[in-house]
Image (cartoon, rainbow, N blue to C red; front, side, top):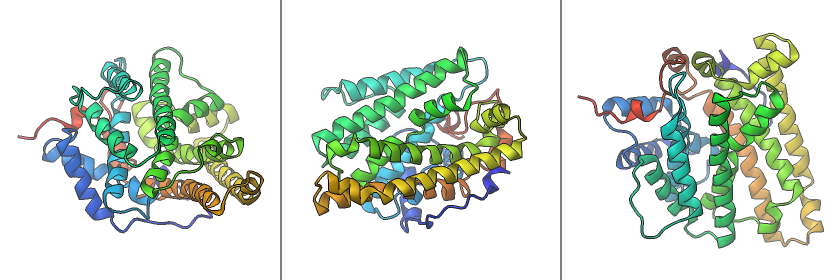
Length: 341
């Protein structure tokens, strides 16, 4: 059972003490946004525990910042499942929502406050709150990263109906865009009330750090979601490793675990060189501290994604047993918006 796979990580586990209260507030927000309607839908959403990822990944934040993190994490998974439609069908609704979101970010209109799709309206609320208090430079960067995430999802949707990449490298490259970790690291700055120096974000050193962090989180996600993907007939990086290495499922899982640990080791080595990196750029102690906080957010996300994955309902046997190629995703709107009698 992949959810029970042990990955030794030299990163201490952490959990936000405000989890329970934030979970309740997030459910209420989901209802207000018309994303979760009815008791049955609420039970399904709460069981999935997708928004709880915020408590593992942003363990120090509280209040409105914690609510923003919870709402964003919950939104991510509902958007992701919008693409999970019965085999043979096209995810036309998901594509339309994706295009609306790209337009919302790239061509914002102060005159339009209403959005037809609840997922678009909910994102508009998240995006408004996320931009509050942040510099114009951060907002432009975050907008770019959101658009890259959204267009990555369009790439995956096209590939499903034309050519599904079978090799590990290609699928990992696409996964870097669709995982959502880069926008989530932007969010770490927002809820942490800091910004790394703008030019520093574009450096090769920080890009290498982000690549290592995304590799680790992506592989953790692939291992933990393997049974869900098997049930739906969806591709998974473990399958890629089995084909390319001509190995068993268990051997491929262990190889993925090793790759996670390798990525984490690489990140530790890159972070070890941060003081020299900051010194050569002549950063002030305050600026250097912000860069270190950004690095800490990567470690927290890696450990948080692992601990959350082992404790949520989304990757549980119960969820996997209810999935098949002929049904919509666990948190697809058809499973969350009908009002129970």
